[in-house]
View 1: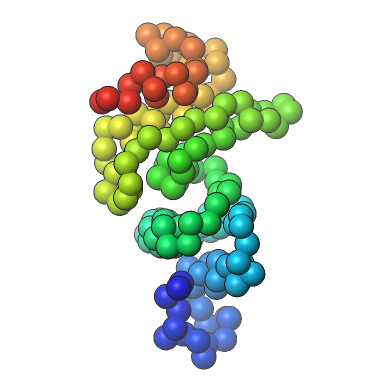
View 2: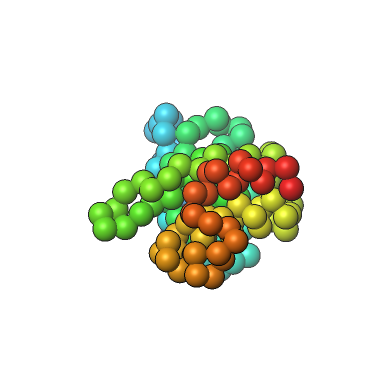
Amino acid sequence: MVGLTNFAARYPHELSGGMKQRVAIARALAFDPEVLLMDEPFAALDAQTRETLQDELLDLWEKTGKTIVFVTHAIDEAVYLADRIAVMGTNPGRIAEMVNIKLSRPRQGSRGSAEFGWIRHKIWQRLQPEEAVKEKFPILGGPDVAEAIDAQATL
């Protein structure tokens, strides 16, 4: 299921970072959980391996139908993988906004689309201090990501 059959006889120290992440995912799936919590699983990987594992995770999600709660600081990763993004605020840490991602599936090839870029930018904007957003982008007004994304969904 995670593409490591040819490496079954290898010791952990002989596996790459990406392979170790696949093992961790397989270990979590072995218990057949209803929800899979993934806390920045791809953060330490190089960009190419990270994107490969993101595609493999989407394939795994399509096959299993598992609910996945995926924690990441990477906006591109969140937009690519998610159907909904909880944008976190600070002081205290809280969910500042829930954003529904309306990109079509499968997502492969969507990273270069105008819609992907717009959603990514609006979420980035939401993460900036409100004063900085108004100063840099006065034409865009306030940082209500969900409202802006819904209004621009027909790019």
